[in-house]
Image (cartoon, rainbow, N blue to C red; front, side, top):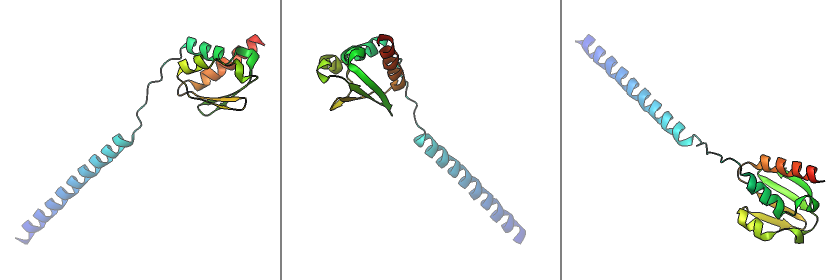
Length: 125
């Protein structure tokens, strides 16, 4: 009789261990799925958008220096008056002016816009 109780006790321990392992696995998967970052689709860059930005800044004659800082472009211009504010507003990109520096926040494709502005400036200078 003692042997039967020991077998039942051992079987219940195995059952508890199995239930605990399944619960731990389920908890781990739930945590993983909740914390996993969703990859957002990056829309392709519209060439007319970049060209409009370039024209709004006053082309190469007005752009003195372009810097890439994280997802922002810092553009030093020769004259703030040559900037077409209406075109900048139409682009729907947040822009901040500090002296002769304009900081533009670009969410996606920042490097491509930076490269375009650098290359376009070199072509026209």
